[in-house]
Image 1 (cartoon, rainbow, N blue to C red):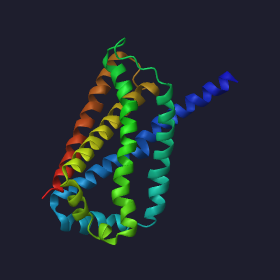
Image 2 (image 1 turned 45 degrees about the horizontal axis):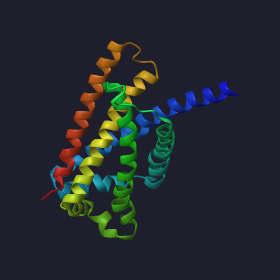
Image 3 (image 1 turned 60 degrees about the horizontal axis):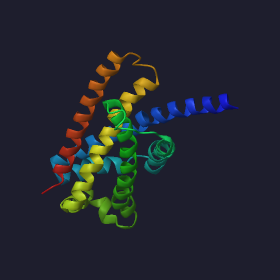
Image 4 (image 1 turned 90 degrees about the horizontal axis):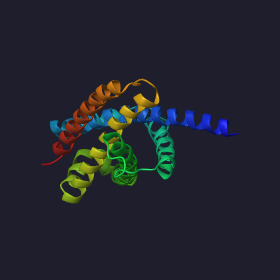
Length: 210
């Protein structure tokens, strides 16, 4: 019985990390690049980026199967892990231990941010056609409010950290970086990816400002 539970936990941990990379991590990277197109102006963003996405066949099915369902599974198991974690930063004040705790804290922050973001964009667009017709203008209206801008900036940085650190952890969980040296080098790669995505994301936020 105990062995069966341990095997289930083993498989769930790997599914959890895999979902964090594909498709959630891949979608986050695409979404940040997509929003970075805001720097080219409203006509390009609405006429090219948004029009392409809205014209995609079976968009709702893709959003549910490829984005929402994996996100729910990843977040649900992540919350379960968070309730069981034993984080002692004062007793074990090293970088990996801090990253372990911040990974769980950032996950909760991201969930709260997603409720705000999806509510003010995708959900609001269901009954306000003007949001879908001029998403650039809608985002500009939101982000010109300082409180909303800072919430988006924090949500962006939490998301990027969660992905980059999760990718580094995935290398350990999957046995791809067995040695301390391999973990250190791969950690630099993941940190570089996080910085790159953060720059792209911030560029996107600033592109919506007048």
